[in-house]
Amino acid sequence: MKPGAGKVFYAGELAGRIERTDDGRYLFTYWPEYLARPGARAVSLTLPLRSEPYESPVLFSFFAGLLAEGNLKDLQVEIFAIHPDDDFTRLIKTAGWDTIGAVTVEEETDEGIAEALYRDAEFERSPDIGITLEKLDQQIPARPRGCNAL
Image 1 (cartoon, helix red, strand yellow):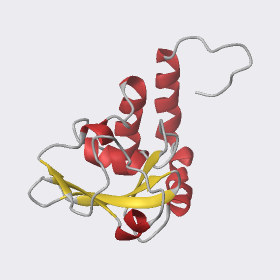
Image 2 (cartoon, rainbow, N blue to C red):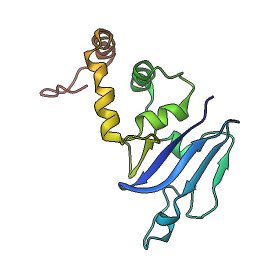
Image 3 (cartoon, one colour):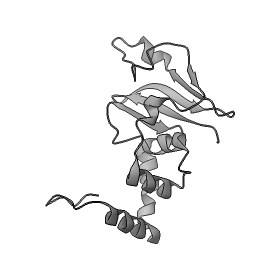
Image 4 (cartoon, rainbow, N blue to C red):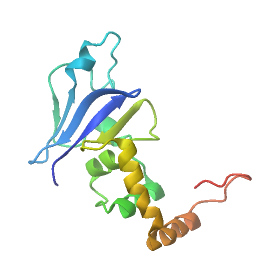
């Protein structure tokens, strides 16, 4: 697995950083500025506020819980060309929006999430995406009347 990093936001505020190291370990560290803020809240009960990094040989269960499952996972894996077992890459590529709760994760790059979304929107022009969406649409049960979204 290749190393990588993501910015962790709590209620839209930069709270910390999650990373996968060269040797496959996972680290989560709260930003000192976030810790110094009055009323700062932990991103999870399993990751209480502290200045020392948390370390784990596997992806922290809280962050794994932010990931999609089933058909949506399959679609993410196909669109982003991610190995199905690479939960960390899926986390930093897909947990920047529409997550359950107040925590989002944005891939650490030189561009922001808005620019990345705009850049990644190019896949909609790909001839293969229509086939992928059609295939997914066939697997989704009937939608409620008036609902046109996937």
